[in-house]
Length: 375
Ligand SMILES: [Fe+2]
Ligand SMILES: [Fe+2]
Image 1 (tube, helix red, strand yellow):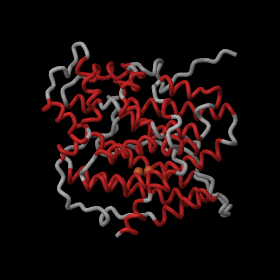
Image 2 (cartoon, protein in one colour):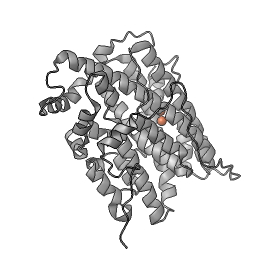
Image 3 (tube, rainbow, N blue to C red):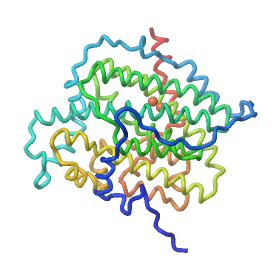
Image 4 (cartoon, rainbow, N blue to C red):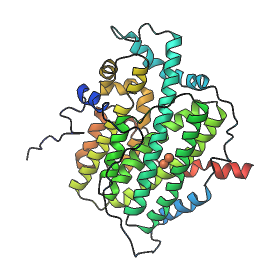
């Protein structure tokens, strides 16, 4: 039987410049953005604690709660430009490539413009972390309601608290330490809307715990590694300790659930993972930042779109370094003749398939317990 080509993201061509630019004009509201949540709330009468992996994670979460008000020193003075420039070396190669393009819009940029670009990029990145954290807050509240397993309801309840704390600390850092906010990136919000709008309970896990949080964990890890700003460094370290548990929650739960799915159902999960990866690729184009800097969105999109070029932009590709091994661990890379493996090869991120997965990694991240033991 000849397989009919399926449209992804509702686009005839996933690399369509017009489609990507069209997403930018979606209105997500000035103050609120209502989006349909689908899926039944499931009550379970089976209170048996039958999932030791999740139970262990729940115990860990209960003793790893930190308090953003007391555990972080908000009196730390922060120089936003200095923090922004710490990210510069990683972007240098990309900037040089971009400047060398024939007719490049940034060919004449000097250090002043690139510094301003980094400051805007920092504001943008932290703003997207903030909005993504709110997405996680809402998704995990949904998981509490929709997962059929009692151990998963218990664990997800701790994650709701974690995510509230993350929204709180990113919001406070943006408000009190940086000088500019950005609205939510359309690709990010479209992905979150899809995740919340899917009635299948496991899709919330797949979209949020594996894809969005996998990318966040890699991004936080990079930023934590390069920054010397003590407040941000500690904030990120604490957030990462929580996020590593969150991704582990997704891996443990989905491993069990996917083991019982048939080929057609697995394929739907693979397609969802691929669409999520495309959304995240589009998100990383940072259109609003380029626009603030006076660079046309179309030019930037065309430059960044050679998806295979992600391989030439190691900083960007590395953001997939948690997602790919976790998909592999879930059996999604190779199910159905390796359909997702081929797609990840196309978009230039398959090289991370053997990086550390996050099923157990959280055990090495428990910074709160370590700090309290030391202090
Ligand atoms: Fe979070
Ligand atoms: Fe999280």
